Amino acid sequence: MHQVEFKPEQHKKYFRRSLDILPSESAMFDCSRLTILYFVLIGLDVLDGLDLLTEEHKRSIIEWVYGLQLVPSENVLDHKCGFMGSTTVIHLKNYPSCEKYCESNVAMTYMALCILITLGDDLSRLNKTAILQGVAALQKPDGSFKSNYEYGESDLRFVYCSLAVCFILNDSSLINVNNTIHFISKCLNYDGAFGQNPGTESHGGSTYCAIASLSLLNKLNDVINSKKLKILERWAVNRQINGFQGRPNKDPDTCYSFWIGATLRIIGSLDKINKEKNKDFVLNNANFLTGGFSKDMDSIPDPMHTCLSLCGLSLVEMEGLSPINPALNITERATNHLKQIQH
Image (cartoon, one colour):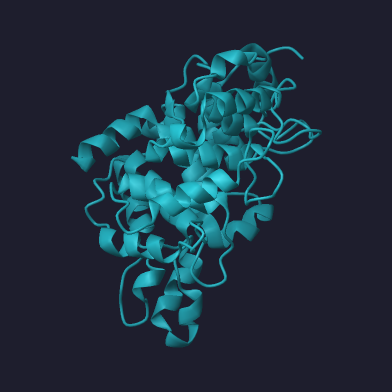
């Protein structure tokens, strides 16, 4: 496999088109359009391409995102506050008979906050108290978090999203941090990596969620001592074939250049991988007709794999890409903006 030319302008155009039109197979994501918007805007920011959007367009996106915020009302209880994923379902808050379907999702709340920060919003229109109460209501006695209040599944993905929301809002006083750290530690396996729940197979995505969560809490050393760190490092480095696989005996996938790469960056071991092989793999999965990146050579591009491919390339210092914050998965530029509005 040889390294092909990196063409950032094509990927900017891919993201710009994705804000206006997507193929019909994307209709299944209508209820979580916020997810697509997140990957498009983070990806554009990594490409230093937000200037493709006019200030009016940015304001309209910000207004749309705030329109997804659920605040306490006659039909919305405190424990369901936060952000929903789409205007497809937000109107249900006006119909009492549909109240049970009208609730936030902590992953959508995390993505909404990242979008607002990336577009330079000051977060002054957030109902922070309601959001934090909504997050706290999702915590289970074992320290994990559900995705949403009614029937939500719980695992490390939603632990990460919950802690990221608390980090962004600079307040974790309503959650039991010690229980969460204990839950994360129970997800650690003998091979040094983490499963989504205790007793489940180690995976690159859940390992990232665990390590990023501990990093946001500044508690990494409380769970991962130097011996465990070496075992984790070996597991993560061994996921590289040319690109990275999510778990042993699986094909490599471009998104794990971020999930595994960010994990290794956080623990200070990214220098142990073959960066050139990883670049080759990711760049060879770019589509130079439409722009964008796919998971592998047998797939078509999508916003998620395009964004995470670029984030993975940023981690290995691909020329022309903005540096990212590996624990929040936003750019350092956006992180600096967050720091300014937190003080």
